[in-house]
Length: 172
Image 1 (tube, one colour):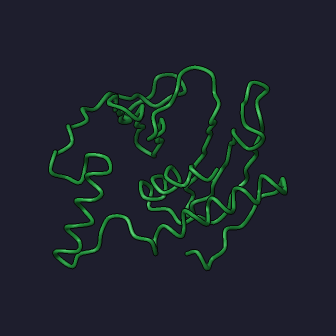
Image 2 (cartoon, one colour; image 1 turned 45 degrees about the vertical axis):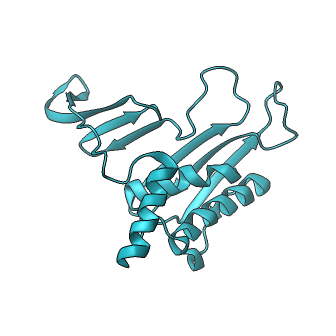
Image 3 (cartoon, helix red, strand yellow; image 1 turned 135 degrees about the horizontal axis):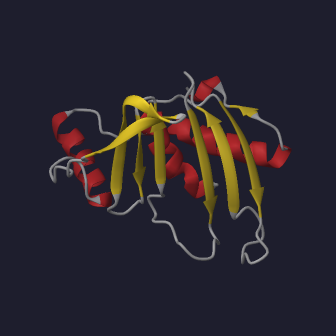
């Protein structure tokens, strides 16, 4: 779960969520080369009805996931999926229904602006340097990342105890 901090951080950022609680289960697949904890599933309460589900494995056979994860974001008026590489798709809810489901329509996802803090580590470093030069706040900050660290510790505690864990308000 330690490396999941990056995914937890991204999830919090995308939904503007504050971690409130987590239930997590870890297991070791028979084919694993790890001693423990290589696979986990967690359900996070991010407040205001926002729920983030995480599933990850360091030893899954086949269909390797990018470092950035694979994402599916479901919202009130549509969904977005991203493979962690270049495939980013979205659908929006349209008026009417198709049986018991809302009608949906694909929507065009505009390309990213090359000047907008993209480019992996280089983009983050450029953002950091810009913050130093201008006195603005960088996109990622240690004081904010403590919330993601609290998610990691909460998930580990939940996996060890088999219980839902409340994430400490001190991390908020």
